[in-house]
Length: 294
Image (cartoon, rainbow, N blue to C red; front, side):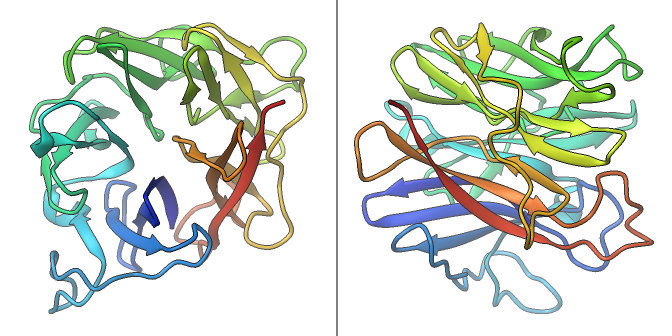
């Protein structure tokens, strides 16, 4: 299970997350599922009756990756002020024969019934959760890139933007490790989010390749492009229960009860990053933390 997005709408908290069953072979065999909560902490899985699974529709599945021909690494966002039939938008990925995860989009009027767009938003590899932020008449897309331009380089955070939900130009690198970081560390998913006007944050998940651990750092920006790292140590570190091997923060902030506070959710795992799914039983869960800006 991996949390993709949590959005609060009044007293209703909504979570879109990915799940896999025992038959999965690839990352794009994911199921997009939906959960709800009255407080952001206690969650239920409603019976939606949308997707058939093992002979019935008594489940909370919105999209089946196997039935859709591939579906992975999703994130959902609200596009206020646009066509109400496309108020909810989604970024998702499909594995291509070119050995790449292309970035695709989806639209929905209610966040439940989705239209998956057939053409990619970006026909370039971004094999991680890719956030998109509608902002000032443009769409900001935060992707995966590789230093040196190919898969042999270290992973880093990329950025591209478009004046509409599609045709994103080639992303450029905006955040990466440097000589002061541990050897073998590189940035994975980024969880870029907008908190307020002229205030953006990301929680780049640092993959420590030698230790096979993933720990999330913090960076901030005034323009959404030029980010400054907050110190050198992880801000969301490994836990002791479901998150002993890796933590991946999900994009999008949910305002807290007090001013200048935001809830963030994250996926935790007890399995090393490069573990073979045929050799280990995957184990993990979802947690959250409160970011306080002073």
